[in-house]
Length: 68
Length: 302
Image (cartoon, rainbow over all chains, first blue to last red; front, side):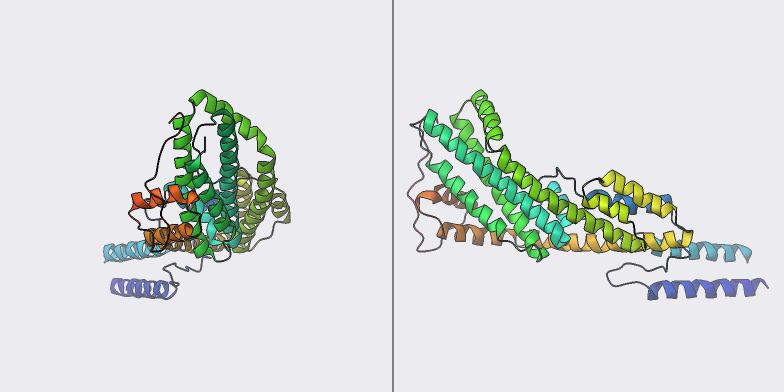
């Protein structure tokens, strides 16, 4: 029984690693399918915070120094 | 056996979480010519609207410095009639060429636009710095503070025109960013988009609304949305990294070519300071280009 459990776990491991490997997109990103993943607060913060460098403030400037 | 099975399961979970972890590469350390601020500014240049905003902002800053430079020359002519302004005029003439170069860039060719932004921003900074140093050698600091304030007031209308033009492009850029996020989330939010379009939502409000939308999703929808947003982040980071590396790679070669070309297109009288800078950088003018004699520094108050 225990041997069966171990064999099944091993098989599951191999399958998951193989499937994960197959879904790695070009450029090194990973498509996990998403739906069965639990999003952590850190992951949510990361994607929301990325807006800080993408959204420009209306007073944003490119400084080149003063002439005087 | 149970222990082995549990260990295998733990290994399996670690393996899965490793795949799910973010694959966003960090930017390489930003040494000169791409300093930290410039590297941050490049992040929005992977889209043509973002590149257009950055190039317009650079053009505005150069135009501002040209206007300042012209007013300084007028001031010197009136108050320091014996001061030799040849070097300042030479620098101003170079800034004018730079402004034309920036205006001629195509923001839709984003990698070229990034290179041009890095190159021309560095040039503009160097030239402005040289101009400032010369002026500070000639005019007293208190007098300069008054002059700076007066010129600022005199050119405020031109600067407001620039500001309005750039603001409109910034709103378009921000709208594009929000639309892309909503697309990744497979959601629409016309109210938010309209607010961004009209400049009524800043980054804090946009983030708050995006977070709220994520929190209203089912776990499955949220996971799909976050993964899609992370893929976008990765793609953006890769594009920024690539543009940054390419801007750094040929910087010196492009600088030499650029200064040679500028020298060819300048009158001999205007090229004094450019030749001096080329000398400092160890760049020899091409054969056939007239080179002024030894640069004479001097004039009243210097």
